[in-house]
Length: 107
Image (cartoon, rainbow, N blue to C red; front, side, top):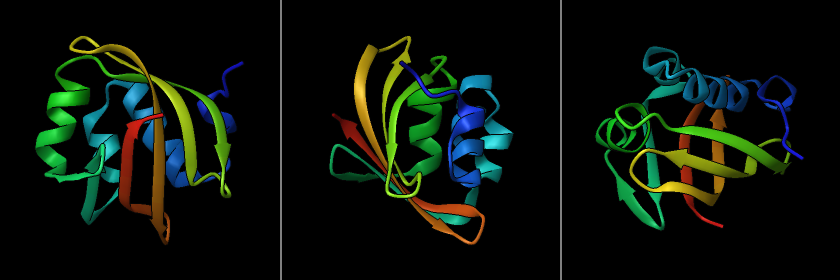
């Protein structure tokens, strides 16, 4: 059973997931701090390049299966036109009301 984005506990994480599913790059970037960082499968990546390649140019979307750590950790089915669907884990560092770091990888 998936968790609707509107039901996610943390407002910053909720905005992040909602923006992905809406294909809204501007809202996604607004959910991040200006100096946000990220990693994919343990390797640090350039946020702007990664989100364009893995989310916005390839119709990325996520269905959240579980959340934990006060909404700062998710397990989700992530789908895009490049890789299809994969089970992924997401961890977020929230600074104020925005995400300053996110880490993702296969779950």
